[in-house]
Amino acid sequence: MIGMLTNAVRAMLHNSGLPRFLWAEVYNTVTYLHNRTPTRALGGRTPYEVLYGMKLDVSHLRAFGAPCAIVELKEWLKKLDDRATVCFFVGYKYEGGSYRVWDPKRQVVVKSRVQSLCFL
Image (cartoon, rainbow, N blue to C red):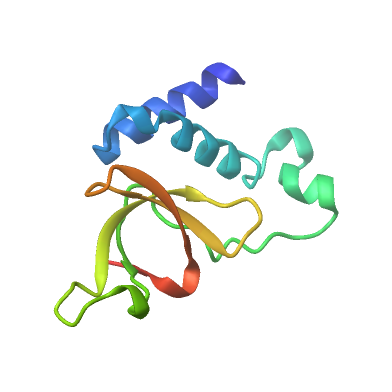
């Protein structure tokens, strides 16, 4: 299992063009997606479905490495400041309701609510 997940991490990092130091974020994303993917071993059900006993909504899934914009809070901005920051999608927050995005300008991964995020 570790080898399969590591191969997926390697492929996602290579295809997205994101820096290698984001490997832990990618590993979390691969694990998140693996737990929400149907398998033959579970009769076509997902591990999430077996564990929690309910169908899973996958409408929140996004393409890894996709460019997105975070809308900044207005009280922090001056009149001529940019209203959004361009970032790249790197993962999901397990509690739900937010995504994890990498801000290349500040070199940090930040959590962003779904309402303040716009995929480009």
